[in-house]
Amino acid sequence: MQKRKLGKTGIEVSILGLGGFHMLEISKELVSKLMDIYLEAGGNYVETAAEYGDGESEKKMAYALKGRRSKVVLASKCHARDYEGARTFIDRTLSNLQTDHLDLLFLHHVTSQKDVDALLSRPSALDYVLEAKKKGLVRAIGISFHGLPDYALKVLKSQDLDVVMTQFNYYDKFNFPSTFDTLLPYARSRGMGVVGMKAFADGYLYRSVEDALRYSLSQDIDTMVVGSNSEEMLLKDISIVQSFKPMTQKSMDNLYYRAPELGNYVCRLCNKCLPCPEGIDIPTIFKYEGWYDRQMRDYKPHEAPDYALRERLAFWYGNQNEAKEAYKKLNKTYKDCTNCGICEERCPYDLPVVEKLKLVDFKLGNGEIF
Image (cartoon, rainbow, N blue to C red):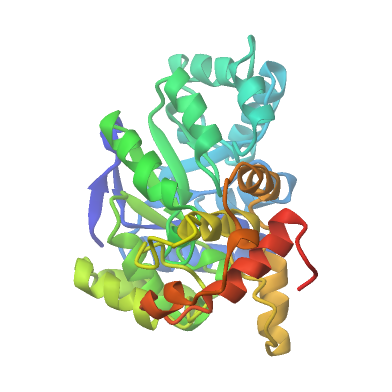
């Protein structure tokens, strides 16, 4: 399995990582079997979190790694924000994982201003984690988040850390483009390692497993963590990785056109609809819709399983307030639209732009019932 350097840490990681969240769904014996398969295939990056099952995932990970801790880069996450809380959870994590140190510890899900304020106060969880690194309890420190990168960036610009972890997939590229355009370049400019997650957009890209994993691995990341909970799933992921070659830009552009999950509803932010005669910034409005519900609530009929999945994932990242506040600040919205149709003629993806603008106004601006 290919390996890459994890930024300035000097740690070498396999491009496919094995995550611990879905270990909550299976027995410790199956977790151990999956670990056997993963390590045999050349994988070496395994990750869990204190919050996953209140330590259950960590304990299953320890069971699966018994006698072979030295063969892996072991990562966990701490969701505490205060100094003492971090001490308590990190001590418990080390005990649960039956190890004297972590190779990587993430400050978990930094997704709000409240998180930023807590971590940058003194003393905080960040202070304890930095002390833990000096004591050798932690080799490298990271920050993890999903959705908007704004809050994680505030912490990273205040404190030099080693690694960042967030979502990289071809669906959320058009909902949270600043992850790709702003966060990633910043992290690399600081020599940070980059760990990817949610290659399959929380399962939404289940119809396109190979495209999704190849796409995520083609981004400027060091490893992509997957949450396989069956032999079949893990072997499929490993087979894709073992024959992996980076996608060309042409291949990515082609994927944007043909991906069934993007269809003729998700805006690709190509800006070809502009300029609008009325001065409406159409792509920005659709980006805010992405913040709100990941452009999943399209008010079209869907089969029951697809509808249930969309409803479960639409508000997964919790950026609804940011979306509504940003929308309020726009000078022009659907209310200024004259329904001229020029934008729809220009759209290469055949989006129903005017109808979509109206729907976003209902979602974000308390517009007319849709």
